Structure formats: structure tokens, C-alpha cells
Image (cartoon, rainbow, N blue to C red; front, side, top):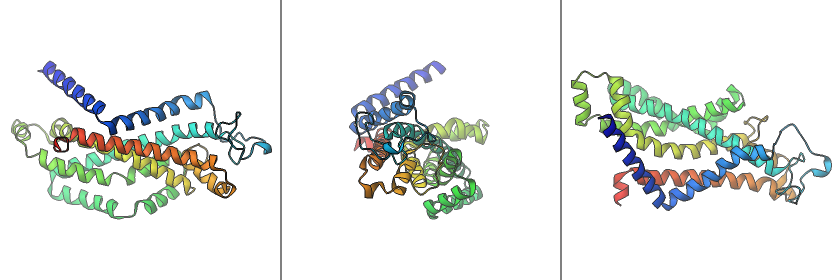
Length: 292
């Protein structure tokens, strides 16, 4: 029985990977994201960057040259090294915040859909609160209260971006719990948490996975927004902090395009990659969309 399940799982994984390879949106998003992940891993090793080491006065806002391929910033630091260090921080914040958000959203959605009644009402009213309240002011308030360290920023983004996932997962759970295999498992005496973990979660996981990729784009955008507004961690390099400092020093007015364009383009490229992957996986994993 176990070997049969493993074979089916491997077959399904191969089918999904084959579908990904045939989907142009998925491949464009995957390749783009892979490039940025490689930059985040190896970039800071090849070109170390420190927020505390400044260049000389003659190096301030120098345009791109052989010595500095993307020029220097307002403190004489290499923009390319800053950009690669920022990739690591921005992607780290996006990934961890997404995991927190999806864990909360999945738990709330499955619990609300499976238990129903009072549990459903309480959890959905809490979800509605996070859906209705403007996310940016809420994140700004939480970031100001908790502080601007990188882990506080991750926590703030994770705690404010789970509501949409909870709604989607709840709707799917309501459908799955009415299926015959769930009723049979209940009649055999299985506990609620066993059913939720072993039977409900695997059936809603494709939906959770597709939504996770889209939430990652939102998390990176949120980090960029908070950092640009001055609520990011000033001791670390991120694309949002680069944009913040570029705006503060008046790089746009000085014509120092090499300072603010690269981080802006990187944010757009990564968000676009996650968005393409999200729509592609939704199309691949959703049978109805796949038929269309």
C-alpha cells in the first residue's frame, strides 16, 4: 500500500513538472527567480558589502565605470555590491514572511471550514477584520511598535497578510469535508486533527501552494514599501532601503539613475516572477482552468 502511494505520488510529481516545463509563464518566472536566488547566495560572497564601510568623498554618486559597474551611492559604496546584498535580505524576508502568513492562513481556513459553527464565525470575523482594515497603515503601526529589526519586519508582514489565504482555504475545506472518504474516516473513529492533517490538508495543499507564490510577491512588495518609508532595518541592505536612501539624498533630482533604477527594476522583476509562477501553478493544479 505504501509503495503504491509512493508510486502515485512520484507519477503525479512528474506530471506536474512536465506541465511546468510546457507552461511559458511558469518557465519565465522560474528562470527569473532562479537567477535572483543565485545572486542572493553567491553575490555577497563574490562582492562583500557592509552598511558601515563608506567610500571617500570622491566616490560619492559616481556613474557606472570599470571600477564600479553600477556606480556608487551617496556614501561612496558600490551599488552592485549593495544590490546583491539586498537580494539576499529581500528574498529572505519575502520567504520567511510568506511561510508565516501561509501557516496562519491555512490553519485558520481549515479550522473554520472543518469545525463550522461558533469556531467558523469567530475565525471568519477575525479574518474579515484583517481583510477590511488598510494593510499599509496596519503594517506601519505594528512596525513602529515592535521596532524595525529584520525579524520584526518579517513578523509584521506575516501577521498582516494571511487573511486572503484563510478565506480561500476555508472555501475548499467546506467542499473536501463533505466527501465520502472523510465520512468513512470519521466512522472509523479517527480524531478531528488526524482528519484535518492527513486528509483535508493534502487536498487543499495545491491551492495553498499556488497562493503561497502570490503571497511571496506581496511580502517582498510590503518589505520594500516599509523600508522606503523609513521603517526598515537600517543595519541591513535591502532593495527597499536602497530606494529609501536614494530618495533621501535626492538621487532623482541629481540624475543618479544608477542608484534608484537597479533596485526598482529588481523588485519589479522578482514580483513579476512570483506572479507568473502563481498564475501558472494555479492553472496547472486547477483541473477546470487546465481544461480551458
